Length: 195
Image (cartoon, rainbow, N blue to C red):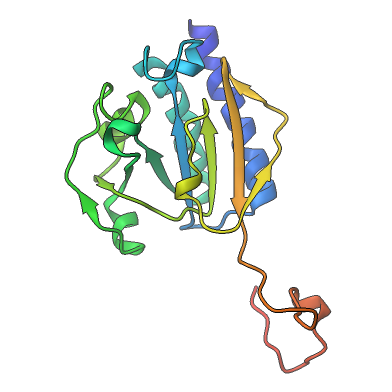
């Protein structure tokens, strides 16, 4: 089991590095994580959650957060209507409304329950619009991503036995044939650009 747990942390660290390369996540942006620890273990979603696997996943995510300054949002299972565990500061920064529940392994999921116990000041919010996301075990995080979601491919296709999908988001492209979408293609010298 310890080999599997080490591999989970290492593989997820690779996934996070690849996602960050393609999504260029900035400090303060939100990464939503949906996880079925049962699926990682090779069992059907919602049937065999485990704290040990949640801990292995947490290690990689915590390391990434400390390195990049991103904010994490852990999606709960369907029994809590896919609410999200976030830091109180995230809820305040993004003006998210709290909901009253505490995730438990059998009502919220092992990963969300683990995150709730290990965050500094966790709260539960009903919805979010994250800048990027990782779905471990086909938990369907799409409802919590900003429009427009763009798939990101990773060299790691599974975490344990769980299928992994990744997404980043981008602003909507508006306008028509005259619209300009990058500052490099703009001919207006008075158009300021940001770094």
